[in-house]
Amino acid sequence: KNSVNMAAMSAIAQQVGAAMFYAISSLLVIFINKIVLSSHDFPSFNFLGFAQFLTTALVMWLLKICGIVKIESLSSSTIGAVLPLTALFLMNVLSGLGGTQRVSLPMFTVLRRFSILMTMLMEQRLGMSRSSRAVQFSVALMLGGAIIAALSDLSFDVPGYAMILANDFFTAAYGITVKRIISGKSVSKTGLLFYNSVFSSVVMILVLLGSNGEVKKIAEFPQWRENWFIALFVLASSMGSVLNYSIFLCTSVNSALTTTVVGCLKNVLTTYIGMVLGGDYVFNMMNFTGLNISISGSLVYSWAKYRDREKDSKKGDVEGEPLINKEGKGGASEGEFRIPLKDAK
Image (tube, rainbow, N blue to C red):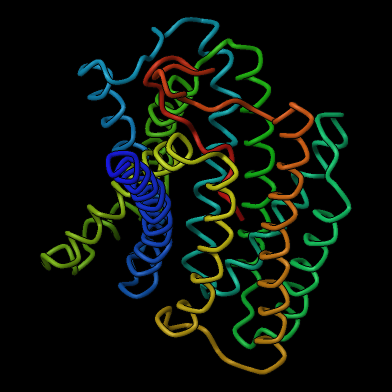
């Protein structure tokens, strides 16, 4: 009996630890990017994006050499499948970094909820799925709060808002395109992540070299002399890989639903912590009210997704299959990392 209790406690500890690891990693990605781009006034989110792409590609390559993940060889069919996706991937990451640089974290977080609406509309248009009334209501609540907050945002920044809304669109388009490619089984999830990162790194080199004076600003950035900033930049460059692994771990130890719910709760913390630590949030009551309405919608969304998942489980029609089951095998290749099709908003 004691051994059974110990095994149960160990399993619970693993599940809680994996969920906490994902939540902390996801929080760190947002805050470290914000600190590098805003607090330290780093002049180029393009270069930070390049560093993140390159780091992810190197990590995936090392994992392949060690036999931890499988990546198919480059072929004409792989290039044909990945190249269109690379454009969406690039625009998704860069618009997100640009929005992070220009907009306060609370507003960035609530405006990112529009990606859920865009995903729902795209999926319905393509006949992929239809959301329940509870999910639709929660999304309306999130977006209503976001609009109220935006209309009363004293630090309103037009280019920043445009970048975030573009980020929402590219997040939705990227997620749906990945689903269609994966369902066609032309490229694996790890292959998509690796080749997306490689192609994006090449494109970013060309963008940086073709930009007007951006490379000079990067080279002359005075904080390269400070060890603290270098450590932050290296951390910002590597956190994408850490986040991918944390999503894989949380999903395999718990479930995809747990990852979604933890992502929603993480956004609640991001909003409130960002008010205090972001450095660029300007408080007013109407804006604060809108933020809280949007947050309540996020919590309702978590509940609605959980309820829908429970209904699907009873029907034996749960969407998707676990990445790795108890025998170490699953719908994906053995030992394969899961790519987050979209961050839980």
